[in-house]
Amino acid sequence: MKLQYNTFFALYKSQKELQEYFNSHTGPRETFLLSLGAGLMWNTIAHILEEEDQKESFASFQMTNPEEK
Image 1 (cartoon, rainbow, N blue to C red):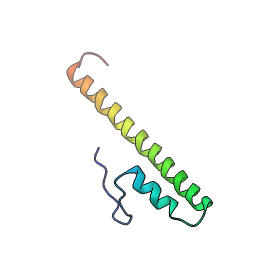
Image 2 (image 1 turned 30 degrees about the vertical axis):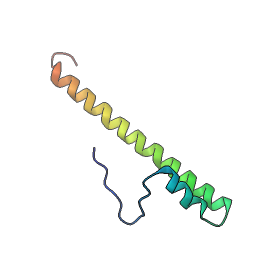
Image 3 (image 1 turned 60 degrees about the horizontal axis):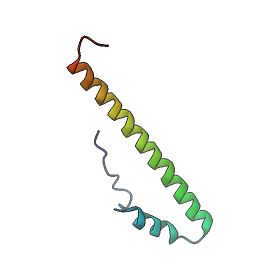
């Protein structure tokens, strides 16, 4: 699976850069909400990639072992 960049948003190339951006906002509530959203999205992406890996592994297994299902 290949993920595409969303050009509508800035690209932060490290977690440190992203956290610095979050901390530049005016209050702890804004920083918290930004961090919450980023964490939720991070887990969603990790889950999607994990599912894709499992599908690819299963498909590869089936191709190398066609008699087993």
